[in-house]
Length: 343
Image 1 (tube, rainbow, N blue to C red):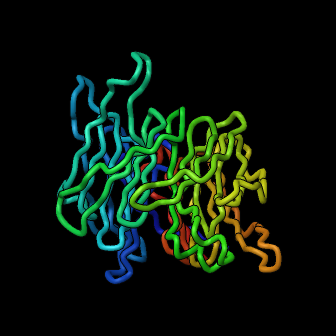
Image 2 (cartoon, helix red, strand yellow):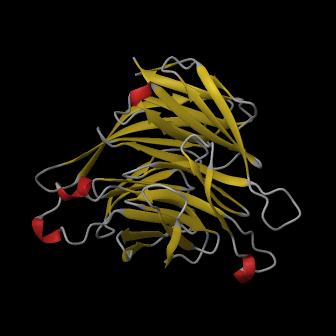
């Protein structure tokens, strides 16, 4: 069971965007960072364990070319082996900052040359894989940036072509996290990244100096706004309220859950315990326990908790720690971050 904790006030409402909450926990300093998007700005907040806000910072989207103010589409902390970067995506480009948002270390402008006159141009979907940061594009491509151990010498190293419609989300998992649950003969081909798009198509990749497309999992007529990856299992949340669990290496469907009555807007995983969080436009946040049967490798799912956020269009939800003992929720027209912790 979870109980409501002290909320964290925002300067304005969260925008009605899927995955509109990023959380970075700093156990050494007993701090949790929260990032929320609203229009052309992103709010960064630091809070103590009891929810007392300690600091706030507001970042603006870089103007780039264009006459209207650019809108930010996502904010996300990317935890790399040697540093943490904060990444903002917008209708103009991709901005990368030091983790506290104090210094912008890289700017990548979007090239609208191959977009039609009626096509929106934006970046969306952010994830770190090893020493790379991957960002999805309106064109369906995924940009792969090679990140140095320090400094601003970030390089666009590769563009991945797997989607025909805009990318919605990207999820990664350290390859080492899958090796323990794979037979020896399958360890050369580890699926450690999945990308999703507006058609519901999932592309499964193996990261490395050159990323390799391993398999495609077809969509079924609805978007896939959010994906997660855990021990070689893909959790995908869809616009019809379903959560589907696939085997990443083969694309085999393990479990289909009619989790919500309306479109899912966010998924998150607590990797230490295999808890999956799903949030949707039906005002509900659910927590599920995933486990893999050792004898057959099948995935089992148990419903652990359901939380209603009344009269709120939920747009973001994240666990606040790797053990899944607390989570946070944002909503459109809601000027606070709601916090819940286990009793």
